Image (cartoon, rainbow, N blue to C red; front, side, top):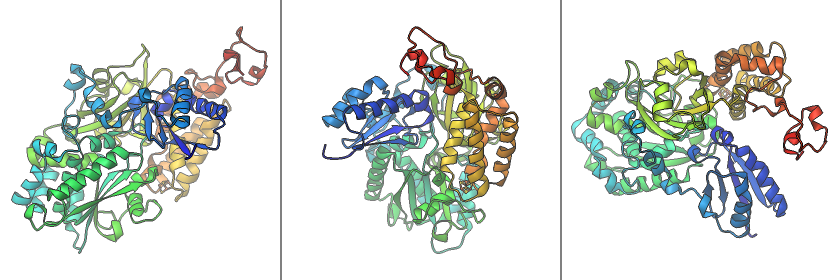
Length: 567
Ligand code: SF4
């Protein structure tokens, strides 16, 4: 075998729900059988953003992403891809057309009827690698309008009137941010598109860029004109190779057609964009950490103020918005701020894109007007819970968000309502869980994620999340103690108040929200040493069956032996 192979196994929550952990063991067995251990690296990766196809794994060289993989598929994948250098076509995800599947696979009226597409309006309809296709759907018309008919202040006024708020999670009014950047008097300003989509279970940015990269670029160019920036960066996860490829092509095409570069469309305005790849650090989604990373430093947040709009990249005023925010801009300019602000609720205008994943029939990207209820998303658009299982919880906002119970299904999608329910909008990750999910284990999973991703700069986040994780781990292992719930609550509230950046301030959310909404499950784990979902293996009750081989391990809380007869 001439080259070393690397297997990357997605360790995101949706893949875990779909039994990706079974693949790990199967891969190890197969590599041992073929004496490949040590010659093949097996890595767990953050969410690969292909939740609909989970469990997902990628193999390089002969780069191939495999979807819907089961443990039974592993022998074929190892012998064909690694030993014979021949990828297994029947399991390979056709990434080029993956985004199409998200948009075209569902033909039912409820799925589309409840949605409204602004950001995703071109996705699945145009060829994202053909600039002529984008031009045929009024592409770059908003930019031409801005450069010929509008002053920078007019553009900012439009964005303010639209009521658009940042879609990256914080929900800060976009127009106010732009105004602050525009007000700075300096020789140079920068602009950044944050495409470092690190939330497990989220794939909105990836799919938007793959499906319609020019919309994002056009929004950025308009923003640069409005605030007077001359240079822009797209900071995107290296785990998104197709999105990067399409972005590179779109930038090259936009330069060739004079939408980027010197004297755009013959005007005095010049602006160009470069791509920067993220290296898999979740904290780099935080804007000040992202700026440090582009500057070539370790991605660590810094206190704000000063805000990046005043002092950002290389100490210059820097306007940062995320992919979805930028993608809204051309439509606001073309169709008008009043039209945009007529959609949604009083304080949350427009639409929101969500990545619907987990235990739900229709997994994929959706875009809904602000104000629809969670119930409508799950049952009308999502088609409900598969396999006749009962809905248990909905996690919004990724690892920083909360887990909501059935009691909150009539909550409206808007920043204030979700916060009042004890969760957050976040950037758009939405994971549905059924009765087979253990809420304590889920909370532990998300806290482990944020604990691993803590940059370590401040003590409450670095040490506090570690202590919380220790407590949660012992609870899931059947060693929970009286007072553990109160300890978690006390620590969680302290970490939220004392942490420096959004990662630490929101890390306890999954734990605090599951304690609030599913407290009885915590109590069962601690007092009765019982996991009603059967997900915490240390608490699983085992029965002696005729397959029992008499290993006696069950006396010490047997793993799987007595049931399978294969200790
Ligand atoms: Fe780093 Fe956590 Fe502190 Fe943020 S809150 S700066 S991630 S240690």
